[in-house]
Structure formats: structure tokens, C-alpha cells
Length: 474
Image: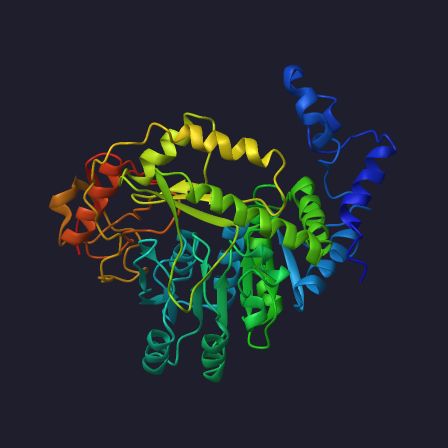
């Protein structure tokens, strides 16, 4: 297939070039009706923002340009079928899990997973068997689950409906999943992988190995995270003989809007073409610039660039993790950069994460100099107490079925110890819950929450006060 083609984007451009008259949704009518002061900013996109007209295809039953665009993506990634997602990887995670898992059936799940995976298990009513990841001493975050841990878990729970993994983690730390996937398949167990941060791994060396190449049954990727696609634009890759694809298609309709965004879909079409047209020369030029960028960052006295030194881990080149030498927190470092109009992806108590673009940066030297100037004020040797950011051992007290309709109440954080948590406690980013609904609250949980709050973490749940929701009876 001709990977230079962009069938959906091209069709939308042809449609708008004919100056169509709109008696259909959306209400902006190709920009004819819009807030005047913002029109010049939005109008190019509004021309492409259409609906399922007869010749523009339908995401939920594609037979034309959308189907061709998806087939081009499937060919590029080497899978049976690729599905465009317009509601982010969250919708893909929800669909793949509900397509495979059943009520009260066991599912083996990597504990440092995104909250959307846990939401899906909750909706299904499955019984999660959590497996704990290794703690990386260099980056000070949770990393991968070892082969030994998965081997022992599969022996004990060989009847589980699926193995759900997250690879790479937010910081770009990735392992080769081939042996793990082969092991799961020896039990006839499908492997579902949240590869949100690995849509560009299809380029091969020098990037880590994609779960698609390793043989996973379903892989979900956030194209918008590292490819030039619009926010919420994602891929779901299906490549399984163990999963019913018709069931998967049904749940993709359930969890995606019935009014999918054509600009988002067109951006996925374009992002795929962009990746497909990368040559070894352009990749090498980008890699050289990334290495030079890291080298210049290492020359800044106030900070150092950290990477996992674990022999099994490969770190994605697009992810650059910084720590301060003076032990200022990652949150403080992020705030300092933001005051100088340098905006990073995320921070944690130790790290600030930069996501490099999949391209050579223009004005490269200017950007490096701005970072240097921004960090000139870091000179103090003030030391913060270092706490190991590792999740306490999971202890699920009640099933997802039990919690339906149960009364809850708010209690002060330390009064919650020993109680059953009634809310998901999620620092965001990265969106990995500290506490799950139905989990017993421990002193270690509360100490970790308090520490993160003190360091400046933002919680995407109502935990920013000193109270937490627990079940009245449990």
C-alpha cells in the first residue's frame, strides 16, 4: 500500500474545496457561525469539521476513506486491523478489557497501570490479580514487572481471562515483552498492552521494541502523545487469534462517541503518513540532535539527566528525565521552568519529564540557552527528605460487585487507616492510582498521600483537602 497517501485528509480537503452549503451538523456551518474574535484562529479547522455525510464514511461502519486510512495504519504497524480512536487511549483500554474480561473472572494486571484500566475492570466486575512492578533506583519510579513475577502469577492463576501490561511507563522505560507474551500464550491467555507512550516504536532502532512486534493480542497507543496527531487521537491495534474481533468492534462503539471528530481522524491519517515517510537519514539526524541536547543539559551544573541503568530496560529517546543536584523537588524545578515559559510534560517529587518531538527542533540552540538561563537561580544545597515513591502492597477488601449502592462518608486522612477506601486516589499526571476503590487504607498510603501533597502534587480526585471517602460498612 502507498504510505504517502492520506485518504481521509485528502477527501475532507476535496469536500471543503467545493464550497459546500451546510444544512447539517455541526452548528458552526464550516465557520459561517462562530464567535467573531476567534474565527481567524479556528476557521481552517472548522472547514474540516464535518459529520457522516454519505461520501465521507462512518467511523463505526467504515467502508471508504476511513477504512482505507485504518488499513494503511494496520499495514504500517504489521497487524490484522488498526482502529482509529477519537476518545483517547482511555476508550481503547475500556473497549479491549470489556471485550475480553467477564464478571467475577480473574484478570492479571500490572499494578502501576493507568486509571482507565481500573475503571474498565470496575465496569466489568472482574477480579483483578495485581502484580507488583520493580522499583527503579535511578529514576526512583516503578518500572516493569519481571518475568519471574509473571511466571509465578500465571502458574497460580492460569485460569485468568487476560494479562494486562503497561509498557513503556510514563518515563519511557521499556522492556522486551516477547518472552512474557509467549508464556501467556502457552496458557491460551491473551495479552493486552497499554502502550500509550509508544506509537513511534514502529520506527524500530534506536527506539524500544513495540508490544505489537512482541506478539501482543491488542495494543493501544496514544498517537497524540508522540506523533503529530491531535489530542485524543489514538490507535488500537488488533492482532489476535484468541479474541473475538466482532465483540471488540461492538465495545469500540460503546465507548466512543457517535459523533467522531473528523479533524482528529484526519490527524491520525496524517500522523501515520508522517511516520511512514521517516527515513533512516531523518531518524539519525533527530537522534544526533537529541544526544546533543542531552549533552548540553548535562553541562548545566544545577541538574542532571537520569536514565535507568537496569540491564533489561531501554529508555525511549524522546523521554528526557531531569533531577536537580540540590535535591529541589521535581515540582519546584517544573515551576521554575514554567516561570520562564518552558512547559514540561510532568513532574514528581524527584523528576521533571521532557517529551522531545519526533523531529529536529528548529532554533535548537535558543531553546537550550533559555533552559540554562531558567536554571541559573538554582544554587542552594538545601536537601529535601527522599521518600521512596512505591505503592504499598495491594489489599482488596471487597469486590466491585459489593460496593454498588453502599453508603460512604468522609473521614480525616489518618482516621481512614484500616477502613475500606470508597474513592480512587489519583495523582495526575501520571494517572496511576495510589488507592483503589475497595482497597484497605494503610498508614503507608496516608503517608505517601501526605508526602505528595506536601511536595506539590496535584490530585485528580477530591483529596486536595485533609479528607478521604470510605465505606460506612465493610
